[in-house]
Length: 166
Image (tube, rainbow, N blue to C red; front, side, top):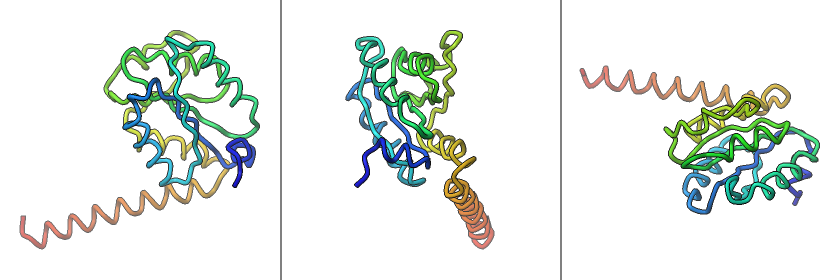
């Protein structure tokens, strides 16, 4: 089995989920499930930007040394410093996807913190697949497959409701 670094260096695209604490596990599990739909390898790290800023910067440096496409997903609630700090200190994209997904904290980061905000885990992962689809046709195909399936589902629902006479 390949190490995470080898998966990153394969060049197909990987994600690192940065959780603010163990209390975010339920949300992290949703992100992991969505990553599985697209086949995006991932690792999870628990680190608080408020309480462990040096550790966060060291973790980012560790991943930033790897060669290959990688995206961070910051999954921290409350006053989210994780997304702003990681996007400022890394050359890789950071997507803010907090467990309290209507939390505006990650949208108000200072100049130089260039994180994207996507509230739903499924949409955050689709966004990552879109980023990776530029160089990995498997992601493009999976995105098109999910679009086609959604359209088929909507058409089936429309047909069923017409048949019921509603």
